[in-house]
Length: 147
Length: 154
Image (tube, rainbow over all chains, first blue to last red; front, side, top):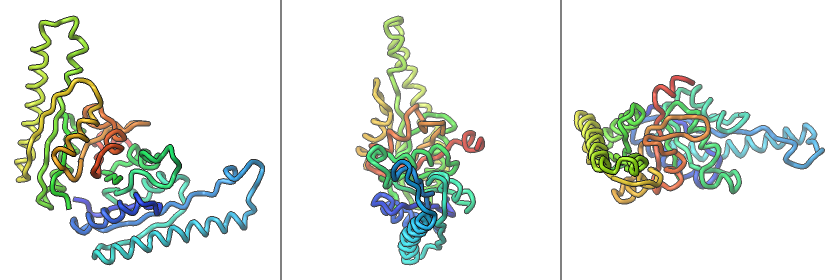
């Protein structure tokens, strides 16, 4: 069965559910877990037309995003350790979260992805997240989706 | 972790991939599989006004094919020593996703495992349903397994 499970998180309640269940599944199967948090590039345009971030504040925002990611991954690491599951994590910049998820799964030789059905993105993505949908379309390994 | 796994099948290689993953998963945990096949009588209904005489025969043949599909899947599961029950559902119209979700509830399954053909846009499942439809309405987690042909292409 699965030997190495990728669990992406964005810290949302659904993701937390998937994290818990994914670690439990890894324990049952004797698999290891790779946690993943995607640090998205900071878009200037979404903050208003014509306004550009100075590069120091952009760097500050990115550092903040990385710190948030590391915190979520540290939480996952604690859960994994408590369950006796071998764990490592990746907190890296990705063009989009789904690219990051699929690429990291490939690079880390994962054979399954466990994730929540929707994360932090807007009302439209509440029902079934766009990230999840794109992962389903792009991933060649099985994807276990939690609601 | 999982006790009862619902596996919708349609006899395609895609659904076989889903079934194989479900068998592997069930084996280690002594879970029971519920093999679900949906006979969509709508397929026959499209031509019903043209050939009213044959409609019963068409239904009969659909049922026969459905039973054979389930029997084949059951044989595959039993050969591995995993316990399984079969459920055959007939429906006319409506999304297959609804039947899958309703059966997940009725059978008290705690996981759905299903093969998918990944295409651009929607991710198609066995029996022409879409992944989104099942995941959105499912009361339990859904394991989506990509068909080999599609997986190789990427």
